[in-house]
Length: 435
Image 1: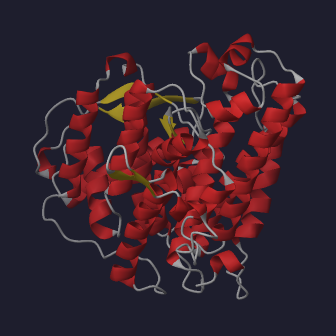
Image 2: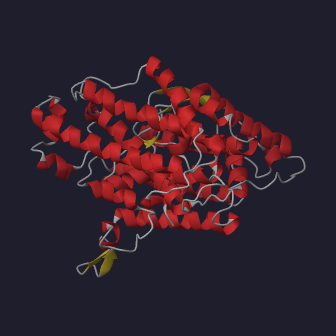
Image 3: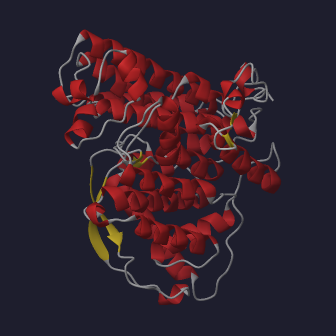
């Protein structure tokens, strides 16, 4: 599977595919070669271009999981999440549910933002820090990240141009890191990737968070995380999603699938909200904005899973809850057979309904973002939701027909997304947004 650049990467020009991401069938991408050991001093950074294949992937979620980050979350009677933190007598441990694990990460990132900028303050970057002899190379690193976005995510790139220069550069840096991470399991050398290789990639991540980048593209992200309140945990969790892809091709229930969804898609939202910023006029809680980002990533991921059922089956993978398939009277054999039956239609209707609930949840938070950051997020949401409509139009045949949104519909959606991005945060909050 691939990584979903959630608020960032799940935009119109980027189609989400199977790994951790927001993209699907993205063409060749030239990346700077990071196989050569680089000096920690920016002045010694050297790199060369090489062709890479990139794909992105998406997952699903249930309505109870959208409660993550809501006020009143402590009431287990209202939110099953807390009730799912159960004692496991056999193991003598506490079994923590997937949504609780994710919620803990949301709280940690939200707390980091509050400490640095205050609960109602505008999220903004620190000013440039002069690093004698390094600024030109650092600028070149950011420019290279921008070039990758401009060439392979055109619509998204245009959306980032509405942001402040600091924000757009930071978003480009995160975008490129997520693509490179996803490429480890979805790229041309994926068959040679081992858990040890992912361990080395995680160690390299820790180094760049400590200000010791390995190559030019790492340098751009290292500078970004030094200037914005971005926590390392979502990045590490995305790598964990890559590990999952190496060893797992079935998910016995939605709780397992939800955690995977967070790893490969929801993480991007948590990474990028501190960059995109929350509107200074927003009355929403910081946690609720992160919850909406999480919901969008999960909705995108689920949409991609539903769109690519046939493609995944050809690779021996089934990214659907096994218990829900059984309840519908279906099995893996039915998916491999690729026949559209009434049982399959009914199953797909329930899965599409779930994805739409998460898109609805995501909408509640987009308006709370900084005004300059809303348009690409709205575009992503509106375009990806239309893929579900196309699956229905294909009579739920996602075995041999690939649902996609045509160019005409895409262009018609962009002005709608722009108009919605101009709507300021509501002064009358819905219950989910109240403090």
